[in-house]
Length: 113
View 1 (cartoon, rainbow, N blue to C red):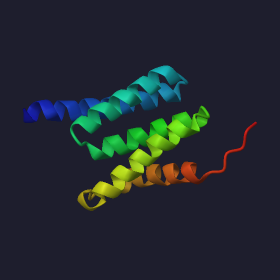
View 2 (view 1 turned 45 degrees about the horizontal axis):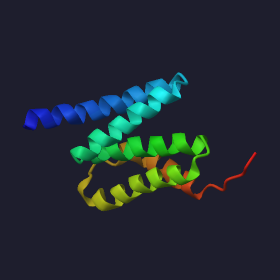
View 3 (view 1 turned 60 degrees about the horizontal axis):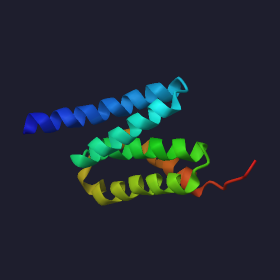
View 4 (view 1 turned 90 degrees about the horizontal axis):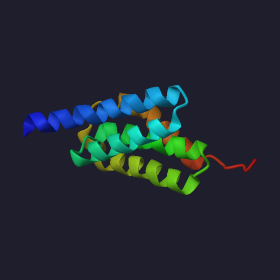
């Protein structure tokens, strides 16, 4: 069972990295699908770091698509998860930049074009 959990955690991280690659190449639909899969898998096994990073990335993607309510939901999920597990996470350096970006987007004033 331990081996299976490690495989799922690795798969969640792989999906997150694939999403970043897809988004770098402008393949938004594929990137979005990978982010959804990454958050789902990470959530199943409480892989907090991957969940937080993928949820922030997904929230940012939605924010740029002007889907603000859904974006706010994902960004808030990420920040809530961070708050809930902050004492248990020793290596926050990887997510600090992402968390700052999530807070910035949540606080950013929206200007319609």
